[in-house]
Image 1 (tube, rainbow, N blue to C red):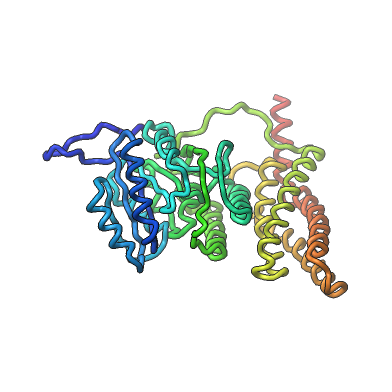
Image 2 (spheres, rainbow, N blue to C red; image 1 turned 45 degrees about the vertical axis):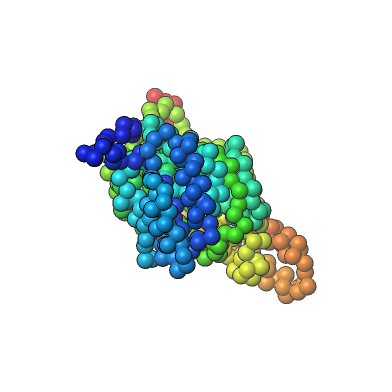
Length: 421
């Protein structure tokens, strides 16, 4: 469905409906709000060919942000101010988008870290009807990003985890530069529970599972050195959100079939081919590749977390995250299991195998502490990598002979039937 870009006059002769509403969620941004909104307004006035609105969504600021927002709404045409009494970026976006009459809804962070030249390419596919949602991506080919190594690693690890745990196909869940068609938003927003930073991810996963098309735009992005996001608290909240959404998908509590029939674009016809890789050499190659990525992710996560929570807790968290992603990736890529049937059981079984790996690595840490209490961090990491290698061998045996054994057999029988036919 394309957007009607014809501006209809009201009885007073003034146009009544914006094509685009850009929401700027803010909390205590008295220093950055005015220059950022003026810059955004100037860009839209000079570069955007349709009627627009900028909505400043203030969620419970305690400084002068509300007063500045109100003044800008009076001074600048097309700028409105919305005040919420509770914090939460997701809450601010849900409230502003739900109340908007615009045909395309977008948002950008107040620091304008994303180059505004990407705004029209972001929303154009939604206006034309080609796509249903659009995201700016800092991880796609053609993106140009300036930020520290720590935030780069965290961002890539988070998106890797989403791919493994929730089967996400989009590349960048947390870039503060997104848009959605209003008809899609009004159908999906009541099903999105998160009110904080996980709001974006939950909306995107729900849209993808519904069969909607997500358009990605490579962006130029410069990190804000004054960002006040609490990385640890946000990461923990995101992990809880992943578990909650994963449980909802596994139990079928979300009305995906109904949404797909109403909003989805449907599946393209595919040829009837055998999609289950059952040969041992092929499985070993794929398992080894996934294992290499998982080990690298584990090393990075452990190194990041060790100084914050200590070696044992860092080992536990890093192993849980990489185990979930590893099971999901091997389920789909190594053993060819498609769809959501049995996914919950597979992850439970995968976590049992993870428990064995945890025992091995924790035991290795304890033994190192007892035998060489003064060992360097490099030696500690080497011991953990060796222990992880042993756990990886056990994981492959468990995957092949226990967790995915029935699926391998069914895939082999189905392929044999197709060959015989």
